[in-house]
Amino acid sequence: MSFKTKMIPLAGAIAFAFAGTAAAQEQVIKIGHVGPISGAIAHLGKDNENGAKMAIEELNAKGTMINGKKVKFELLTEDDAADPKQGTTVAQKLVDAKVNGVIGHLNSGTTIPASKIYNDAGIPQISPSATNPKYTQQGYKGAFRVVANDGQLGGTLGRYAVQINKAKKVAVIDDKTAYGEGVAAEFMKGAKAKGAEVVVTEHTTDKSTDFSAILTTIKAKNPDVIFFGGMDAVAGPMLRQMKALGITAKFMGGDGICTTDLVKLAGDGIGEGQVVCAEAGGVLDAQKKVLDDWKAAYKKKFGLDVQIYAPYVYDAVMTMVDAMQQAKSAEPAKYLPFLAKIKHKGITGDIEFDAKGDIKDGTLTLYTYKGGKRELLQVVK
Image (cartoon, rainbow, N blue to C red; front, side, top):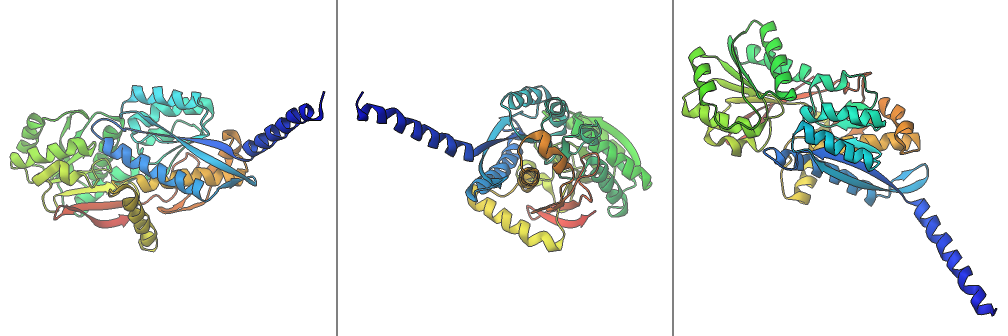
């Protein structure tokens, strides 16, 4: 055997060993994101997904290290179409893909059933926008949210209706989803506690477009405020039909309607200061510039204004990665205890969770619409 033939396998072995070492140095960490990328509220799902993309690209660009080693983050996005059944299907798909953590889902109705699947697999989940209290009341150690829940949001809107809008009679409509029913129930509690009378409750669906029968019934009761528990895709046409019927009551809703797209969806039904809604988050003055700068970067990158929850998705990703860095591991079982005790400084404020997984000291932002634009009323805790 010649010297030359002996050298070939040796060179190959060296190259293989070097490639193996390089691969070992850059661990791939999979982060799942789920939201409605199709359907009536796809604009909200894409907004959330863009927030996740911003975080992942930033983490990779700066060469994030975990336990002294450079890692690469991979975003696995799934579409739940705001449908609970599809939500559990894609949740299982992410579990099978062995993701290290999940950011999502957007809706409470998909987040709650999917959370059992992630819990059973031991995968931490941070929802950036699901507000139904049941999500964190199931006793799942890996379930967290970075926004206030419906108890805070709906209750605050109920009190606002009476204290600020001087409402004595309120009508309530919900879309029969976990989110819609939950926020409507909390609104009624808050309004009743301040002395308002609920004169009528009605139900629709998250796919309805004709509200003439419901609104005709409500008009006969002459309420001061109509509260809608649901999303902007339904609220928009509802506002148009209210205007057509000559209903001038204030229209209130939670974060589901509190989007920049509501102006387009409602058309001339938006009114001037007629709509009051609350975002389950918000920043106080000291934090405003940081968030404004981030929103400007988002617009530059995607050519779109932030709808509502993209900054909270970004913060959810960064919070999860902060926990991995503190734990020196991306393994769910190892970083979960660090996530539960995290104190992360995000663009939306300080992120820290209580024993259930709810954000501590969650803020709410109240908005109205004037001149075809969403206008800040106040930030409350």
